[in-house]
Length: 324
Image: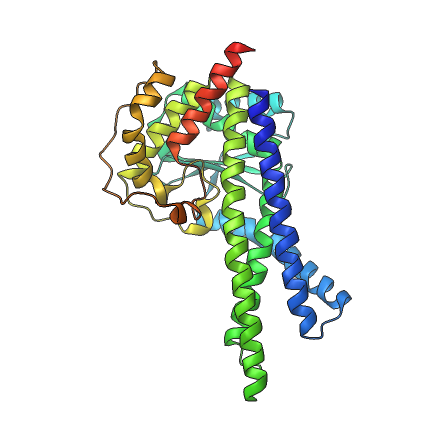
């Protein structure tokens, strides 16, 4: 189990380094071509980051229509989160309920101390207590790994590149044909940076989700509980309409937009999953819509690993734990 966790940790921080180093390096070069001084670039980047840092959590909370709850309102949920936070040695996050019927959960915030753990109303009715605890442990794992900070840093580069691309492509800096062509060229390269850094961000998101899965398996010592929860969540998401934006989906424990494909893959690999987890008993809530097979290119845009891969990783951790 320890080797799997170490591998996920290295993958997470290597991807983060690539996002920041490559993205910032190319953007620095583009701004330098415009004659912006090094100090000017650093000031611009710092201001952009500060604005994102303070504004993004508020926008996310508004989009999710959160209701913050107290210990008296949700005693069981509060107790679970409190115990898991103490076990992980992280500050107790605020707890909020989203009215969404989609069975999901996520954690966000500027820092560990200001973090909020969000549980969808749909999750509370879709899973049992053991599965809920495993999902909450996954979210606490994000806090323990500082993912609220990691993803803020990582998403900063694509957002900055996108802003520069739109500004130079559609900003109308000059009526001069040569100046306009030069601005368009810079805008094009900024968009390329945005596209490439987004792909790296998706890879980082997939790595951090696997890393949080691994933490949940360690914290609960019951990987099968998270495996069962993930299967239930995936089948349920596959049969529901999705109203949430792509900006939020990378925070979820399961990607709502990929659930239809995930459900089909779960069916395909169910025999292998049942062999790994004989005790796993997941009733399909509703048949998901048909989806085309995943190609390698499409997989690059996934925010989460396919559910069947997550479950098989949990099975690998369970078996390695037995051997240790």
